[in-house]
Amino acid sequence: MLTLASKLKRDDAVKSGHSNSATADSTRRVSIRDRLLVKGSAQKVAELETNLPSTCKVNFPDVNKLHHFQLDVTPDEGYYQSGKFQFEIDVPEAYNMVPPKVKCLTRIWHPNITETGEICLSLLREHSIDGTGWAPTRTLKDVVWGLNSLFTDLLNFDDPLNIEAAEHHLRDKDDFRCKVQDFIKQYAR
Image (tube, rainbow, N blue to C red; front, side, top):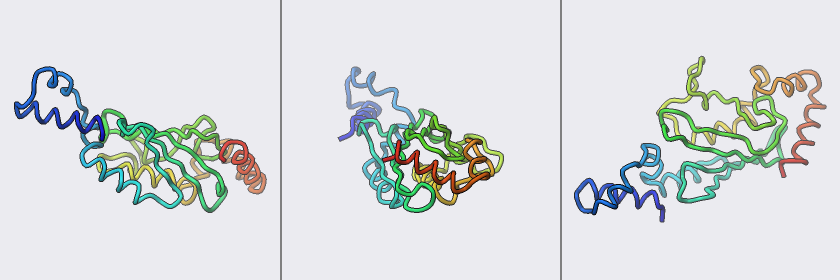
């Protein structure tokens, strides 16, 4: 099913001496990231999908690239209810020692997400002052739940990345809500 999985099997065959040198050359460079993602990949993907919040959906555009996937979040409460927000998640070669790279692909008016898609979420920081940043024990499931929580309990107006959005909320909550809804109508359907 997965090219990467078969590559790892060939690598194991090479190590045990059951393969030719051409196969050995093609399998030498399998990253730790790929080993972690493929090891029980069907199980991990199924686990990720079954443990998602009801407002999230994971999408793998290329099943041979488990290190690149998309997440759709459709909040069912709060300011962002009725919007559909898409995130792109890339798992770097150095995973699980460094966090995945995440970008919001949907234009949004949010204090913790810029209009260009940068995200302020401590879990995605390699180094965090408050100790809640990335750690090798964290999983992709943690990332999904964290992104989903940006629309509810992690929505933070006190430590914004998009200062203009946070100040807008402080000045006029009703107008902020209207602008969020305008963005949803234009970009998040």
